[in-house]
Image (cartoon, rainbow, N blue to C red; front, side):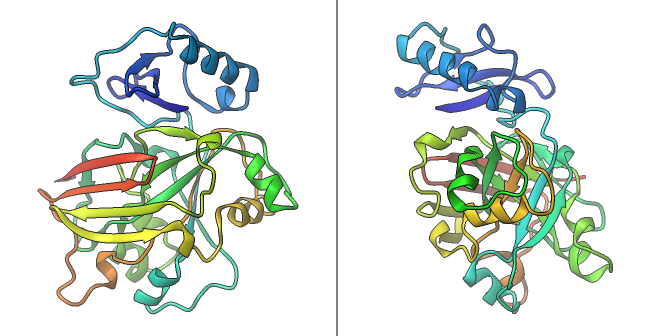
Length: 285
């Protein structure tokens, strides 16, 4: 299933995109798309049955904002330097273990919402990423199979980053990763049953129509299952938590001088095979 949330920010309603591309209203069946729903197999089965029977009312998608596909996210766990080519372009050694950092849940916005360039920013950068959404409480998982069984689905994430704040201002990466609007998510949460192999998805990102990133999840250093298993050794993952799994080569930081960092007025578009497409116009904060 392709689950999404539509409407003005803070007042989104749950919806489903059916096999014919028609937007269907789920608000009569469930209150929202959140961790509680994703952990409820019976509720998900009811949604599937309603979708297959054609009983869900259609929504007019014209002019309707798409919000983040998951409400009330507890935490956004991020994996850095998780593609061989991205580590190489930044001059970093291949990590021996996953590099883990966090984004606050309040950085998450809709897939086509405005992204704000922070005040005094000179190095705002782009990163297309596969997001994993957790569907079952995960702690101390022991195998790849067990890890994938705890995944509710997948989505497109844009891990916007301010490199000067991240790298040159001391401390950890947090200052460059947690600026407002720095994690567009969606358009859909595609349930795990529709993604046969999360290690065989193409990722692309364009800036002002120019292709900048063109990669595949097959190039991840630590595959999705290993990432979920690994993270569960250090923290409990709850339904509705999100893991951003890293970005392929092609970010501004890895390009020759003068590096083409983002500015107000730029337009970023990104997509992941079968998971949908995002478009953001940048404005000054």
